[in-house]
Image 1 (cartoon, rainbow, N blue to C red):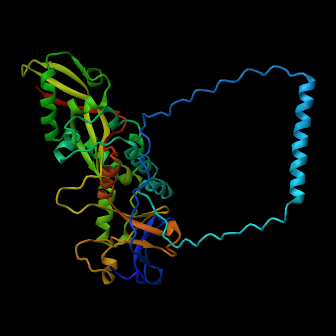
Image 2: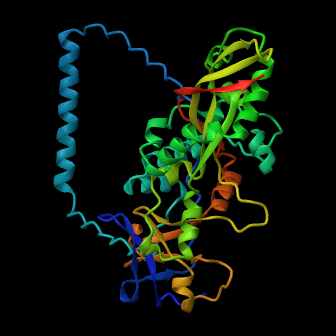
Image 3: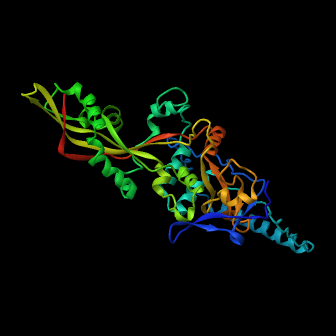
Length: 405
């Protein structure tokens, strides 16, 4: 255990330039020993659970009017009791002064619960990230045992993910495309990737079963406008965007964080994700010369799909997600603190640290990893991994992509 008196360098967000700022020397943080991230707060209620409506108490019927003589007798009785109480007070000895008990000074470090992270995310302008994490906490237990099951959307019970484990409304494609790196991959997808030979080969496989059906094909009609079905049956190309929030931090642990931007809401919400292209509309025609059908792809559906999960790769160290407090996130890299620590295998400080007085809750930051969310799920039998779909956008293709069938 390193000394809790040593100042350790760390990186915090400079909210003016939105860059990591190094705090070292006397401005460093200190180790806070013998404390850990709390997981004691009960899980939130399931989204489908509603509080039972309490039946309104029946109002008693109005009492019958009493005559004036009964009322007078009651008034005299109340007055007599009040006079007796007053006389007893006059005859009583002087009461003792109440003993004032001073509250004991609380010198314990305030706890920080894992379910407080979404509120901290909102403080550093990650509202979508916060909303998705809250959805995970409030969901019923749902996860995949293997990466193959995850890609197949099979849960721990060997069954397909339930319908409520698909989020079709939180993420909008227009919001995603506001981020330049996502817009760059979107442009690459619709201008280049869809016309590659690999895409043409995949389009050929998808279109062969429909070549004799009709002159036009509209996939939203075939799939009842169900994006999940469109994805399963007609997706043929994608473009990859970014890396996860944790991967960004770990990459920066080996570099100079001061030269790198802070992970934004896109990284926090989606991490690494794909922008997909699926068949939208196709026109079929008969080519007399070649004596075969030609398909012209005239439109595509473009959308985002991503898995929201805290799964680590087998055999690998659990992914570091930063040190969190109720005030936000900092990064405490091993390399910057190597002189104070003894580990050669963990690239970040695995202890809670304090920026200033450790008795102030927002000053204490706790290391958070993917595995912490898995532990929480085991404790509470809750925490639902889910699939995110954005809305879909129709993209006309000009010139059309011709596919001989």
